Length: 210
Image (cartoon, one colour):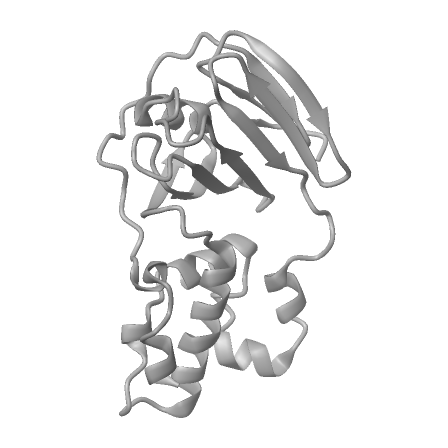
């Protein structure tokens, strides 16, 4: 199995790091209202908005495209796994204490952590977490750990690095997960800087009713 994991996508080997630019820009664009939260943007001209049962989509004349997956109120993976004694023994109670903790454990796991000298149970845990990591990731670039305002989680991809797409997997203090995609015109950098992206994350206001 360790040999199989060595053939995993490159992101399986990535360890999240902090963004090089952690400054927070001043945003004076449109505030978008989405499922369960609102967020400031650096863009001033909204072209259109649309919604489906699973996704809210905002697009802007500056060339940005902002699909936001609607929050799924069904029990998350960690919540389900806490009800399985075998999985609690495998992952540990701390890993399954929240959806955020489980994603964090997965994101910091790499194939290199599988060792011939480890107990089979330890290697099984690593392999399960890597599979989960690959489910979270979408081959969009480096993985960054972000923590701005009340939100924390992970950023995949960079605004000015091909393929010029960003995925945010964020959690609020109540462990609600927010999945936000940012894309633009094919083959062109996003109309967005890292400092503006940091500010967008910091500006998120979860709906207090949820």
